[in-house]
Image (cartoon, rainbow, N blue to C red; front, side, top):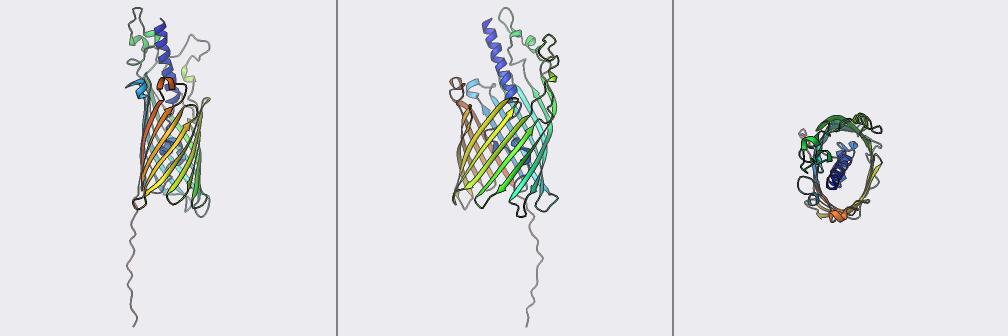
Length: 354
């Protein structure tokens, strides 16, 4: 009986962890995933089209294959038209992600379409205020029949009945629509310094979803779990870029997000070294810290309009005794495509004077 309870507790802990953190995808390299950070970042670059992707894997060496946390995401965005004024523009973007977490195989899939308006606050275009919005569909599903071993599935002889355990769930999948919004201020202070400061709110409409059956026996829990709505998540982030000399730059940044009383604070500093000026190659390296959770190692490579990043989290929380300080890793890439119409000047004929 004790073994069954421990197994049930283990499964519930994974279900709880998955339900909290898989509700929203989050990355160590948050600046490499602009559409996941803030909808106001959509189309906020110089170029024609930006394509990008990021993959995060966590605790594979601790939990084993098939039970780790995996989060791939891809996106594409572009500045498409000029705004109401000469220096303003509008950007659109599309992002797709999937997040698979824990022993229950909980999966969170989403597809979001967004747009942002970038408003120039001065005549020289040194300061911009960007406002963005996301809308899309999401799905959450799990695989209790193959992974979950909850207490109600154990028989008296110790065997396990997956069918009995699956009865705890009303459905294996649920779909809903969601919307997010954000605002960002970008300012160039001088030739060597600029900053970006943003705020975004996710799950503005607080969509309802459930994977469990209504509890008609409890007086403290709602009779229909759909009465419990997804909490809003507020994110504040900022990056300050400083060019120290002709070859070296530094970019301290921070991230603060809160959701349903759970807070996350991360601070980072990324250095860039211009390795080859002729080929425009910059090597990047830095460190970060997610308070109470993990130290972060950051590496990057940039060649012209291509950026590649790598990150590894070293777990330093109370779980470090079980994880042996092993955490998650990420690999990310962004590429900006530039397709400009070539000028077609009319030939001029010079008539010499005699």
